[in-house]
Length: 154
Image 1 (cartoon, rainbow, N blue to C red):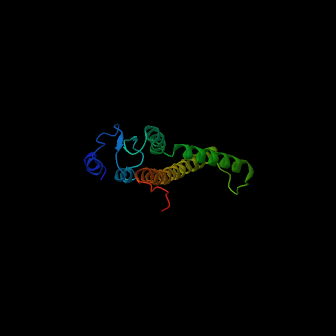
Image 2: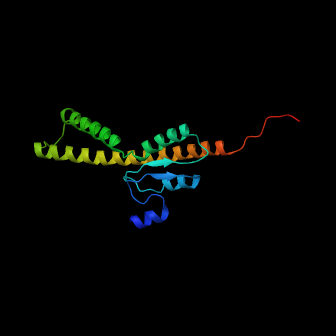
Image 3: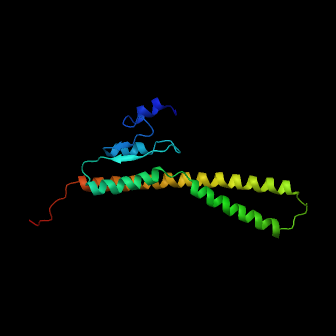
């Protein structure tokens, strides 16, 4: 499933993870969604119907979304959970008194779990944004490729 051979079979234009994925047609955009998360990728758009300016614009947006890993969200959630835990240590009266080691262990576990939850949320959010961006790019390509009828009254 995760072998390089399987990736070559589903996306033959990108054989090496460092090599950018070349988008030449709309079907290539659908394959971007199938890429495994946390594998750094980049895309190069070579759709002939788009202008060079449009290609660079969409390429920049796609590459930004492909590189998102959820780290920022994980850091934010970890810091918030650490702050909430520290405040709860000083404000909540517990029936049992915790030793310093117990309090540290509980705090560490809370921060680690919160970081993982935040990272998972960030990865999910990046996938959703990538899907929306792919749809917008498809619509932009279709608008350019679809011939417009002249607005002439007969």
